[in-house]
Image (cartoon, rainbow, N blue to C red; front, side):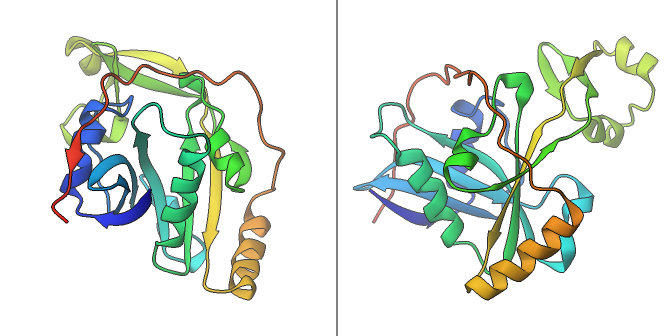
Length: 213
């Protein structure tokens, strides 16, 4: 298998059909895992959703926004895919990603690829309609600005655990990586990796996607 850069539109079918969120997200860099001409998975990076992480510590920052692959791939394929995709990002860069404890995730793929764990965010209230969480910023853009109005539109709130936060430094040299890591650890404490039973989700049928090579 090999990793190649893809056009953004190639990832949309994976986001909508294979990823557990079943929604598109804004992405800047998309990489595909190919066996022959068949795409077996996508790894998508975009601008951080949280504005405080945009150009974090004065360095270009990406968020690992979506990662999904077909079932039945050889052991360690996913970690090799993530590691290879990170190497193909523009350098230098900081990559942030979150493992959703509410989905039973602890971030084992980040642990396997040596990301820096800095703890979990604060618990929060999620706005939910028809079983799907809608980001509060999205609702505000639509003009929904009070809990009462949300309720009238069929939304309700649910308590959520804070998400596990991980960072990875992409650099051209060990010296550059060390310098950026030092700045990061002046801002956050490096903590032991969280452990627990990881919940897998049924993402439905495998995606069959071919590229014209």
